[in-house]
Each structure stands twice: as C-alpha cells, then as structure tokens.
Image 1 (cartoon, rainbow, N blue to C red):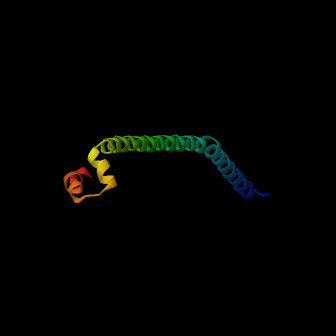
Image 2: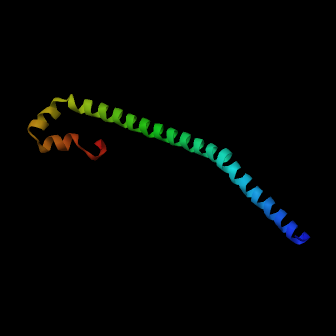
Image 3: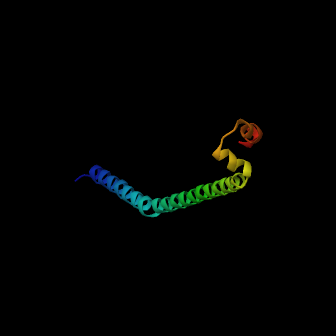
Amino acid sequence: MNLKSKIALIILAVFALYGVLDYGFYRFVVFPKFQELEHRQVRDDLQKAVHAFQREIGHLDSSCHDWASWDDTYSFAGDPSDEYIKSNLTISTF
C-alpha cells in the first residue's frame, strides 16, 4: 500500500469516526433534551386549554344559572312569546 492510499484511508476513517460520534452525540444527548422540552410544552399548552375550557364552563354555568332563575324565562320555556324575545334577547346579550 502506498502513502497516498494510507492517507486517504486515514482521512476516510477519521470522517467515518466523526460521523458516528456526531450521530451518537445528537441521538443520545441532544435529541432526548428536545423531546423532553417538547413534552413539557405540550403539557403546558394542554393545561392552558383545560383551564380555558374550565373558565368558559364557569361563565356558561353562571349565565345559565342567572337565566334559569328568572320567572320570565320559565314562562317563556313553556309558552314562547315575542315580547320576551324583544325585551331579553337583544344583541348585547350575546
């Protein structure tokens, strides 16, 4: 084997070793950290969504309770009338 072939083989071996080490570093060190970060973000976003739904349910519960306790609303449920709609169901209500 001549010197040119040995140098080429050494350079090829160094690049192959670098490739394997680089892959190993990213696969076993960097990638797990990114996965952990992504999972944490997903949990945080999911908690935000759950809290938003809980707040909305609270607002709807409060609004439904207010409307359900009115005698006019009770009467309207049994016998719908245009007078109730005009006086209570305005655009600002929604």
